[in-house]
Length: 633
Image (spheres, one colour):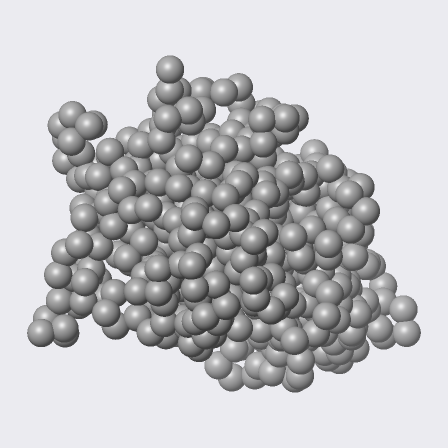
């Protein structure tokens, strides 16, 4: 009977499955693979260059000899046509040798990268190159394709490490690649990189869009191992963080210049694409970057898909895993955005929205995202206390002196039950929760100090002054009929009560026999029981108010799902009706055509982006971005 209802429950709860799998050998999501795949013979423009220097017939019978003669010619006569031809011919020859003599092929790939770099950036070639020339884009692909082959060759020889050196034999000489991660342009440090993986080796599924910027460089996944038991910032990092970097190779000398002591050097820069968007000498070019694949890789490698159910049904066993998780090292002068998932969910539910938000450079520059994980089966007051204490701990860790004003502009985004937890961060409890359990004042209750302190954590709290804006997505402020349905009753019956809460309440009723109803004060309502329509806990939360003296006051926004056209007042997202998700006094309210998984809806994502841009003053209040905004009167 119970199992028969799980498909219904699954259809109602919002979730997103994002997966990464090894890429097929005949597939790549990079433009340089696609454009260079068919480049197996000289282009017409390159043939014209060979013809102009009387090398066409020699190239047909002696490719290495023709290339050598071109190299000799270009040293005496720096010319953009010659340099481009050398880049193209080096790539073609590298491909030809790839299956026979990989060492010789590598030589040609180094040449392809270096000559393409010269073509794109050498000042003396500026007059002969134009962005409108098709060879300009192909030179970018030759650069990226050759660099991709070099990175793969380097990885086969050992691990690529920032602040390390890669040595390869090129034309009988030693080619030295000094790997460099600029700490001035990224919060990441060399010690943070435990592994480097090429993004093109993985395929992502479950994301409707991909955050990919075309330009120069090879997108990478950098992996960092973390010890969450360590003190300080480390506790806020996932156990295995994956973050984007882009490899960009800078030849320290032109190939047409003589090498010193038969040794050439290049700098392999590992560029942070969140901080740096353009590379190269003037005029700079866009950095090729992939933000989606590292994001998907990190979360697909976790066990969070299992945690969504264990966190709901066995919350006490999973309380230790609750906490705030950063996607990047904390960056002062960036506003924290904390995303709080809903019932029977995990931070994985936010990946599609995060992926889309990070497409906007303004969002990247102004904000840093943090995801909150908690077992969703615990009673709402306990879950809210956990979030509150985690945020306070984050403030003590990252803004201990209060000097970072941007931390004090924190934004909370909560989906479904996560919206209720977020609401509890910005209101004054007074004795609203406590009055649901006793007509005695809390100060008059007798009991051990540790028991009273624990209960006070859940029942009595103040607004967090550093939270300035809250966005509610499909939040059941007045509950949901699902809690009364067969599915809700079955689900609630499967949730195990935390033993320590039962012991705590039992001790209080024993010490204060006239303060509590023993039949009702044996346990706190589970998360699903809390969602009973117009339940006492929800109405108590609704009655709480933010600090009226806060400057500026906290701002609320609502995004509501509606399954089908019709009057707003009678609409529903399939789980939460409009009458429950509507909240008076919000700065804006937007209804989007969506089920309960509203955080995946494109119009909802656009609205969140609009709100974030409004928060930093880029957009004035109420200005539509795609999905638009309905400002409440």
